[in-house]
Length: 127
Image 1 (cartoon, rainbow, N blue to C red):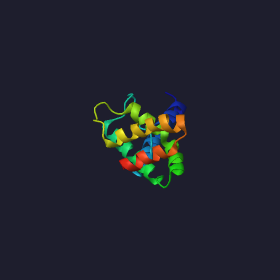
Image 2 (image 1 turned 90 degrees about the vertical axis):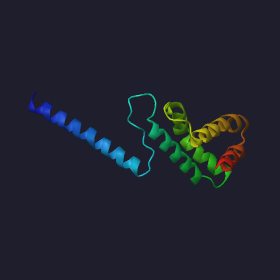
Image 3 (image 1 turned 135 degrees about the horizontal axis):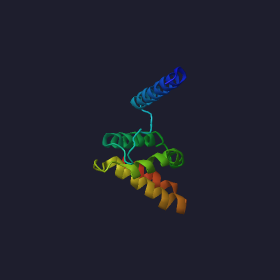
Image 4 (image 1 turned 180 degrees about the vertical axis):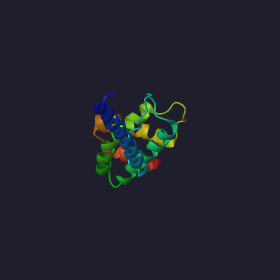
């Protein structure tokens, strides 16, 4: 292996390590970082924690139906991903059930009928 190849390899490994450290620190600080997991499903503890953090974020948009809808749409993709990739080894908890109900309400009531209040009420009554 030439010196140039060794330097490239060392730089590559250093960048991988830096990314891992950044993601770990970001996750510990409460950010919604996607898990580096080669499997399709999330790990059990990640599933539970991500569900908790998503509910926490939705609570911040809990002031009125219109504002809640904006916040919900911002996290809709993460909610869908959580539901699809929930760990099969982790029982579905209250957060999972609530997020799934909110997503279904969004599709059935908000998108089809234009009703923003039902989504807001469902969240408020379950929380």
